[in-house]
Length: 105
Image (cartoon, rainbow, N blue to C red; front, side, top):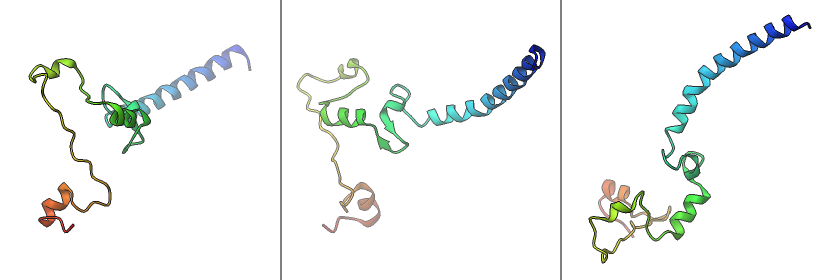
């Protein structure tokens, strides 16, 4: 191939790349909407599973907030409690109690 043929071939490939990029860009943007805007892909392993980092934060962080100023409305004596943690086999859950009345445990 001479220089002219190489240049033409590269231009054709560039056009193909640009078309592919136009197709891929919206898909990547839509995929990114499924993740936290600040933490992004660091917070998830796949769509539904927490990443190792998030599991560490959940396990070892006493309390988490995006900014310290969120504590301005609380006294230093405020006791923060986490939500009740349920196990997969627990029949008493928010969903169960809403749809079946009360627990049978």
